[in-house]
Image 1 (spheres, rainbow, N blue to C red):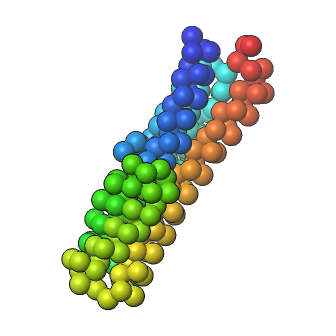
Image 2 (cartoon, rainbow, N blue to C red):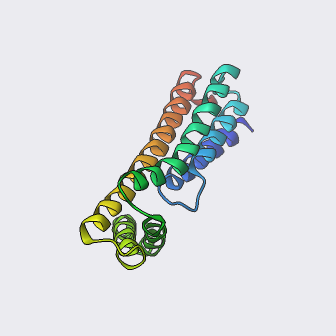
Length: 165
């Protein structure tokens, strides 16, 4: 059962890594779940204090991912049209690889500002860059958390003798 939980923790963490980039998957909560799966296995003896700290960090990253991008867009002069355009562009761009997702997000924010907010090209580009910066910041925080969880799982699993293998 312990080996199954370790494998499930790593599978959950892989899904969390994908979820850090793809907006439809809850990457940060899945990363925290993988810590619990590791803890329940018995081969990663995380303390209660560590789990509470990671719960706080997980919550902070989860909230930052939702609140930072719109704040950055607003700070750089963007409107809700830029935000919605970037979301629609990102979803449509996911069809064409991660690069298509990023380009779709930028183009969507730009077109949203031009078409609906009636902004000049410069202001629309500034808002699109704010949307892009917000996305990169949120995604970077989520990936950082996931890689830290991966480090914790692997290092504690390594020190306990590879989970009995």
